[in-house]
Length: 327
Image (cartoon, rainbow, N blue to C red):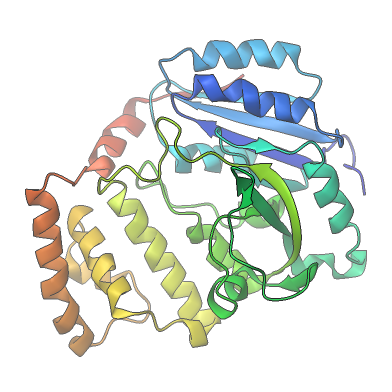
């Protein structure tokens, strides 16, 4: 199936914050795609490194549709992702980080694999999941079954224990039903993958579709700081609530995760009673008595070591004054 009624089959979305030196690589990889029925939505998160000027130049040079989302100052990935999902015209959506590059046949592989699923069955599928690599090595752990095979994202993670990054191509209409709460600059992808992964199957293939780079400047991962604590708190609550309702066999989480949950609550300025109320299945009194002293001790240690960044407070101030435009 090609895009219908002038609708592209794919929307590729790239959020960017001070990553001007990487964006041309992303764009060149899109230019080299063997499958051409896609649009690119690229978001500039208030960068001051010439990102917007470069994106305007690339848009003029592009043979494919480009929409630029421009924030006057930083509002964070979650806000920009929500805007992109709402704007997207594509049937299938993929998050394409600014330090990643799609392989030339990536979109063609996904398109062809999707079309092997009988059309009458596609409503029960969210999309196609594939490998990515860094330095020539596949990032995720070994698949549990010969590929291609069908499973849910929840089973892939919790039943088969597949770890590491993969590429999650997902139907846009499903993502629109899972817009994320805008409470911090960043929220973990599990906040949409777990709800979708309990309700839909995915086709999993063992093909590499993208090359990733993790050590680029302003990368969200590996900062060594306690950032985006309110975002992580909300993501954990969303995941636990969905699992407890839809997949109770996976809903009982280790005490270590409960310790982390209350640790995030402290740093996110959320009271313990509210943090408990955010969970549909509240922790038992015994569990709370066990973990709260540990959470509080770790939170105090974080503060004394200067690890805590109250990004949610900066986020609240920023979203009030930032303006978002489409170019």
